[in-house]
Amino acid sequence: EAQVTQNPRYLITVTGKKLTVTCSQNMNHEYMSWYRQDPGLGLRQIYYSMNVEVTDKGDVPEGYKVSRKEKRNFPLILESPSPNQTSLYFCASSLSRSADTQYFGPGTRLTVL
Amino acid sequence: TQLLEQSPQFLSIQEGENLTVYCNSSSVFSSLQWYRQEPGEGPVLLVTVVTGGEVKKLKRLTFQFGDARKDSSLHITAAQPGDTGLYLCAGPARGNEKLTFGTGTRLTIIP
Image (cartoon, rainbow over all chains, first blue to last red; front, side, top):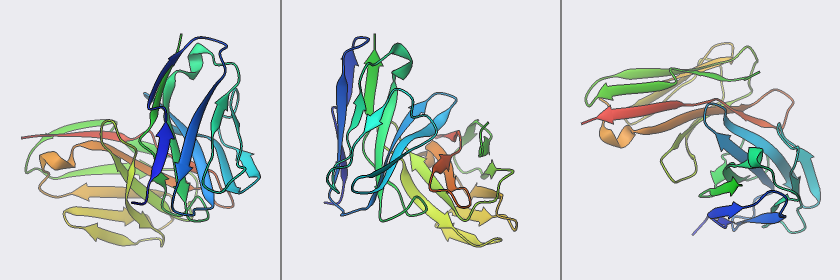
């Protein structure tokens, strides 16, 4: 089944404790991205990647890192999480560019205390 | 500044009624996508409109892209409870690989 998976689905952590949210897709897509979704602000893009070893900032990249060492994986790293990073995070992939259909993962709800 | 403004933000109507939601921008988009998101899930694509003035139909849903490619609308005929969800429009601004999403319209259809 074609899908985007994220782990964990739920995470409660404390300020400053490094964490990684994994994202994997099995559709051989080139384009992958991370979004956060907050009430009243909608979905905002954090980082995107157009191919292996090619990443770029989205609209709200501060406090996040990403890597794209393999085509299928695009982890999101929070080196020192803060409470304002409490949010619902989505990973998405598409064939080759942002204008293509985005396939979203199920989301990761992160709470930073 | 939000590039894509959606209205209304919330809409609650009775089953069987018709409704229209809007997605507006001051920027030109090469294409616009419409997604529906249900609780606990990620957004799922409904349709992509590409040409100015284009109209696409998906059963009871009709999508229109403005002539100037700055706005779009979604019209639902005879709404059903299964239409309940968060409707999002999204588009890549010209020459930009960042995908911008609107703030969404949260639609509730009351049986």
